[in-house]
Image (cartoon, rainbow, N blue to C red; front, side, top):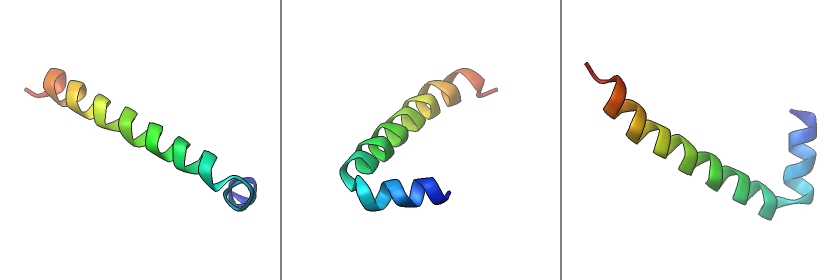
Length: 39
């Protein structure tokens, strides 16, 4: 977590991209996952 904090201070733009990609991936997995796992 300490390294993550340092990265946030040094590269906020990179963090924004990482968070954006993470949210998009979670959203896509949620869409397809809920569709295939729903009983």
